[in-house]
Image 1: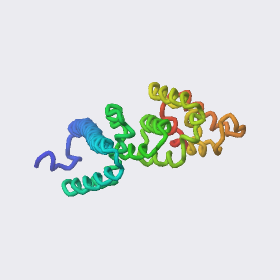
Image 2 (image 1 turned 135 degrees about the vertical axis):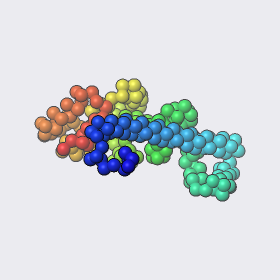
Image 3 (image 1 turned 90 degrees about the horizontal axis):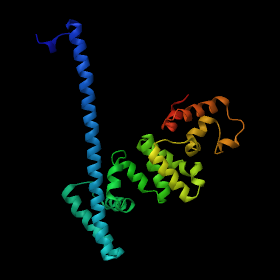
Length: 240
């Protein structure tokens, strides 16, 4: 009988322990490799979409005729779909053109691909205001939001409800740059997140305008702030 056929109770404790230790280590190696592969594939696919969009955009802009561009996209989609199947519809090609327009700097986009999936980027591309778009880019990376979480924050108008949205554009740019460099979210930045407002039992009000916030809620907010952790939103969402 081989070792693999034995009942676990018949295997010596030291063998079980060694096998379990090896299993844990190898499992981590496999999972890490899969994660790196997923990131690499996401980046490769996203950059392909960017290249396709950039090439189409360049051709259309050279001709400078809207009707011409529409016909080109329709015909190109037909050829690509016949050759490669789904994923090359006219709608998808327009997404590829849009990503080339929103992110003209290829290197910046390549850097974002390490943290943001194509689904993240599709949501962010739909935001017209560059400052608002950069806000969600930075927060999503820092908080590791899923696509669903990002969609919920956009739908809840998180940017419009934060203190930062009321500042002059130059100040907003500076704050976002600080966020990018320091990798830390301040309470002033996200206090108006409706999820946090629910947690604090307040609705669409400034922190210093609410005299009846529960003392334990204030204490919890201060502890989260003093900890210096970037995961402020996640902290609140995980709190009872």
